[in-house]
Image (tube, rainbow, N blue to C red; front, side):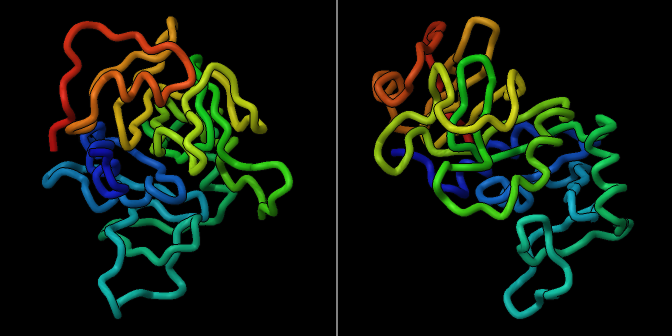
Amino acid sequence: MALDKTQIAQRIAQELQDGYYVNLGIGIPTLVANYIPEGMDVVLQSENGLLGIGPFPEKGKADPDLINAGKQTVTYLPGSAFFDSSFSFAMIRGGHIDLTVLGAFEVTENGDISSWKIPGKMVKGMGGAMDLVAAAKNIIVATTHVDRNGQPKLKKKCDLPLTGVNCVKKIVSDMAVVEVTDKGFKLLERAPGVSVEEIVAATGAPLIIDGEIPEMQF
């Protein structure tokens, strides 16, 4: 059984560490905010000028003036800070973000990522994606393993415009956890009920498979 979006976010939350400063991209990555382990001190940053994002607001309690970079209403925690976007991007470009979680259209075996544009479709801009992939210490991609047409998103070469090169460290998909190594994709974990053979068939590049591959734990 492939994971749903919340399960992908739950698995990524296991990658967090105490004291991390984290930027969450639009889509599945934003859900990670709801699964930060209890007692862990993680500070979430949004490139539109907020450090200290809290969980999504309860129904009926949203402040329409308080949004993240994806224009979703959010909450803030005690001790949070608000600032302009230039200060926010100075944090990003200065290498002060420990982990960035992004969605992606494509990821290659050497860590290239295409995440901001499909040619011929209207986009409002790339947002902070290029700054994030250029400066983050660690990048995890949250995605489905294949696109809506059943084509692999993990592949040897990106066909879509690149956002960044040699930057992705790990992919958490609805089927697997895959590490990007200097020898290519390495399969670390599989979704409960998903076989190694199914993951291999859904991946557009060779997979390094070292011994028995465990199922993800939640």
